[in-house]
Length: 342
Image 1: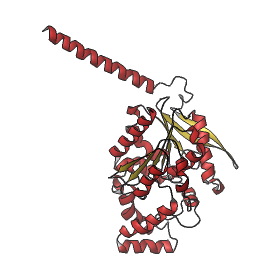
Image 2: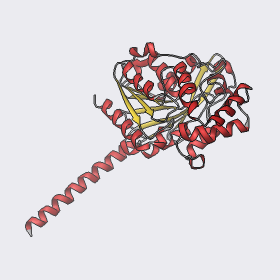
Image 3: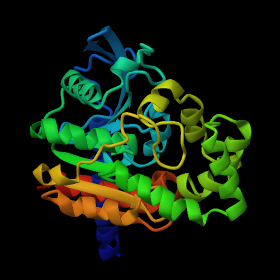
Image 4: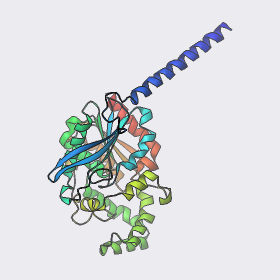
């Protein structure tokens, strides 16, 4: 009987200790002491100086961790932070502080509606302004860029990597010309021949906004290579982000085609393969097996930087954080924590 009481005492003590430790961790993560964004629930508007005036961009902090702060760069260009909302299901319980951020021209941020501002260099300097305003530095600053955000992440690292602790390039290759070739030579031929013929017919006439063209893309391309679910089941954050896309911004930088980039789009000739060896910070490249991007090129990116790793999502497409969620977040969180412990 005495041993039974002793065992119960040990178990109860262990449970209480774990519970108290958990409470301390939670208290620390949600501690807002000294925060200037308490009144707004973590939202902070950051002024961005441009050649055409000063505009505000919208950010929102979640959590508190002096060692790990992740800034999320959405895709598009011209999409919104909203499709990152699935991070709420994974980052808080791991104690990761992270920031939603709408780039200039997107969602809650100002939209100058001036195409002269839609350049890669200006967006890079915008990210640096945001970093400074949010108080991040090389001891805690992780940058995660998805799709176009991956382009922005690479460019930021090439100019400002001294401010980074870690870099994550999600579902993006280091060369747009390679992406165009993959789209034309690999992805397009996978479509039914009659469907591809109809799509090419619309594109030849420049009818990229035709409801019939968009219906074909949505029915045959999106569920295979963007997010591998029927469109009716796409998560609400993704639907909202797509619905609010700044099309003039997207058109200027990406172009109207869903198969690569055409015309004089800003990103058409972007290629940084020759410069990736200059990136010294720990870098994780993430790719989906069914992505709009070539998985081999995304894996190659991880080998071109000096300290890279690759995470393949075997069930994932371009939005691997949704259609291969467990693989995506297990690998992402593991990378962030391993870098933090270095």
